[in-house]
Length: 219
Image 1 (cartoon, rainbow, N blue to C red):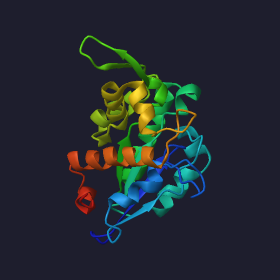
Image 2 (cartoon, rainbow, N blue to C red; image 1 turned 60 degrees about the vertical axis):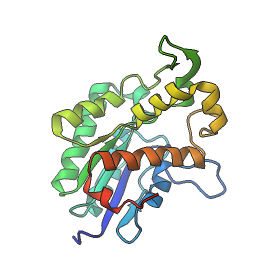
Image 3 (cartoon, rainbow, N blue to C red; image 1 turned 90 degrees about the horizontal axis):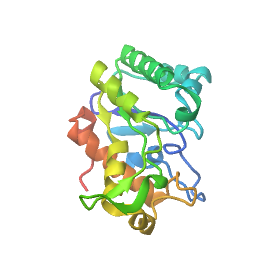
């Protein structure tokens, strides 16, 4: 593959998916291309879909479709947990994530975990003794499975979960609502919310020194 051209593929749920222009919702996978030089990076967000779990990505045939189009040097950004945490145990979730890593690496492509962003219900207006706002984690430790595999299998982790929680600790619930990042269901993102996420993702790619980061456009 030509070093100057890579495709960034996604494995994602409704927080990553592509929406019609007329829809209020935006997914980070829909907008992430704006962070990269289009001469070098093509984003393929076609396999991300609302309601997606790691299990369905495999059983529904999407993982097979992904592997069929992966070229050496391509990236796969994987963001799941929002739907998995009610349906599958952490052990099952971790096993499927490992299957993704192994399959992607067999194709000489590069898996990157993107931990799931928190929902607005995570933010509160109560402060702790350090003057930071308290947060209430809603993803039941599932993002930790990505961090574990990251350490065990040397998979780069863009910790969007920690980034969004930290931001909520700084801004509180009222501050978050004023920013208008979430639609009324407090889970999905507006255009400005998805832009907030891709800022974190681009910064994460840069911090991890991922080779694809050299194609980021400077702000």
